[in-house]
Amino acid sequence: MLTLVEQQLLRFGEHIVLAYVFCWLLYLFAYRRADSNSVTLTYLVLFSLLMSYITPYLYTYAVNNVGVVPKAVFHLAFCAIQILAMCVIRINHNYFRLKMSKMTLAVIYLYASQVFIHLIRLLEKVVFGTSELALFYTHAINTVNVMLLIVCVLCIVLPRVISSTNEEYL
View 1 (cartoon, rainbow, N blue to C red):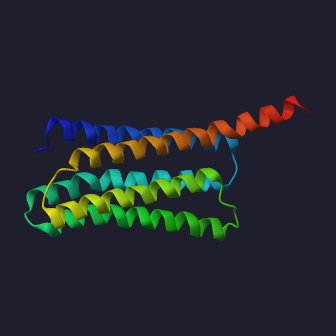
View 2: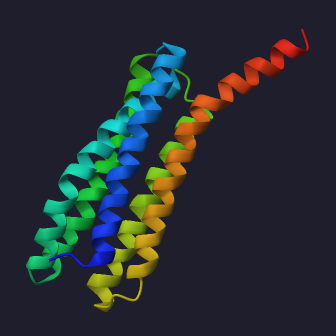
View 3: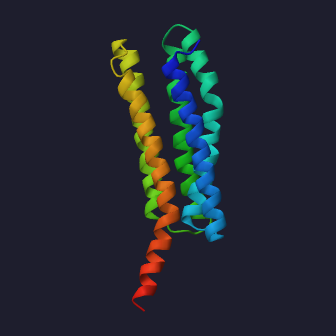
């Protein structure tokens, strides 16, 4: 059974995925082009939906089973998905011969930071057997998710701002 805080965090995760989808659709309708940001936002949405879908199953497995292995499966599954997301974004940029935008690099760095956060939390569970970093872990993952949402919004807003300021001085 999930605690109230865990239920709220799960709902927050579901809502942030909806926000990613909204930003992705807004970007596609606003710009209608295949560029670095559209590729990145597409895979951000796909991998976020995947992680949102498997989170309850992984969490239930990790909580209902004793030992280190279920906890490792929980954290390493997210690490694997995020590393895969970074690789897929990079491979698609190479395939379509796109230069990686600053927003794409920001998404990759944020995914890397989430991998680091998961590994730190797993290390704490395995080596020390404590839960001292549980609150830090929860807030750090949610903070990175919000930062990913900010990057999504910047993907939409920045090209408009840059193009409008360029037109003013012509």
